[in-house]
Image (cartoon, rainbow over all chains, first blue to last red; front, top):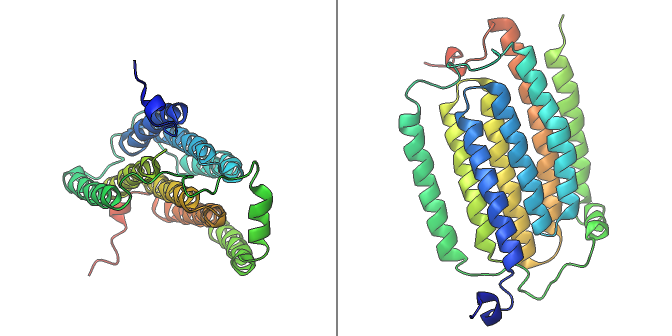
Length: 179
Length: 99
């Protein structure tokens, strides 16, 4: 028996199987986010998508971004979303008034057309380029290299980002307080 | 692994997010769909980072995560404000800007 891995030793079967399983879970959960009739179920499906994204980042050897994804998205953003669901008095259980009536009739063609264009362009543009093939295998632990970049080449955007976060925090407080 | 694995996953998630933004009426659910779109962008950034070597894509992805967190905070504050004034967050009902 001739295995594909014997012919092409760089085919990475384990990574591909892991990728496929996680990707299938992510796509199913993402469809649940946009079709669920229950706001809390949509939020929990979004947790699945974000956890899957963190796993994909690990497959892409981006461990720092994966941990940040878990901390920021699953930890903080989802709590914000659940607070939003709670404070807007969302109906518990199934709610039939979450979607625009008949909107799927034009939303579905738009989404499928966009998907077709993107798939065509990506398949035509990156036919079978392999990641990590340019001879730049990441060293174990890229976090120190990332921090060097943040505090040297990307220091000014980092500095600006702190003001964005400060403005967002103050703005949210001003918007949400009662008086 | 093929870089297209990750790019196509990002494209699928992006289109699902666009569908959700168009089809949903509840403002909180629209914000959740926007989060789907931002996550797909991050997958793309990290795939290109791995394709070309270097660590710049990781930095971009971290900045996107930070901006997305700020966006959700302000967005949900606005949704709460709308709910307090209108007792509804159905986006169809916010039609004052229609000419």
